[in-house]
Amino acid sequence: MTWLADHWRDVFPLLGQHIWLAGLPLVLGLVIALPLGWAARRWRTAYPVLVTTSGLLYTIPSLALFILMPLVLGTRILDPINVVAAMTVYTVALLVRSVADGLGAVPEDVRAAATAMGYRGLRRFLAVDLPLSVPVLTAGLRVAAVSNVSIVSVASLIGVPQLGHLLTDGFNRAINGELITGIVACVVLALGFDVLIRVVGAALTPWTRVGAGAGVQP
Image (cartoon, rainbow, N blue to C red; front, side):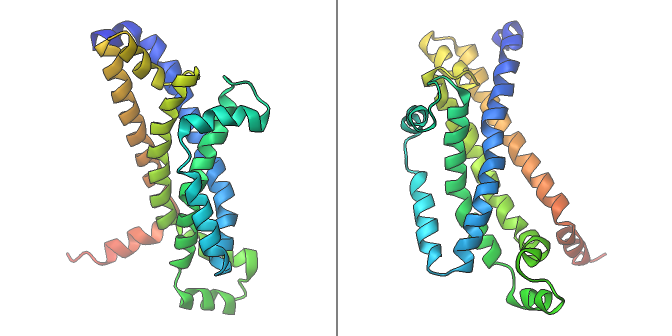
């Protein structure tokens, strides 16, 4: 607490950078994973290919991917966009299966009823399939968010400033207060992302609360 009280002005910019590096890829990854997950569910032969291929992306070591990105994107080694791109890859790797399984969890009778009411193609996907798959998507996003917060800290090894800097600097200089601050800040940030995603997911699925309330006996 003493170290944090003396250096809090340095911690908050690192926290803001960490939020950006971990949060933006969640949005970008979801946007990319939605059509891929839809394709995996739409065509049975595409499911094992897309899900397996995307899953393999998550096995790439983060440090290696951070270093590889400048070669692929033509950016500078210390450009934060490299971390955003790498984290987007990891997010897609985690979410393609979640999207496909979420869409697969929509009951066929609900789809049939929506089709009978005139909901077809993209309209049915946006109005029926996607909303009903939100609980599964929320679970996948929660895992991806915690994973992103953890992996982003590795970027401190290539000089990209964020909360991971507190971990590496605190360890290298044996400053326990800085090291503990970095650990606690990462945990709190991961919990913050988790709570935010749960709140947004609950707001997008009000029928789940109605169903739960209906089952409560006075």
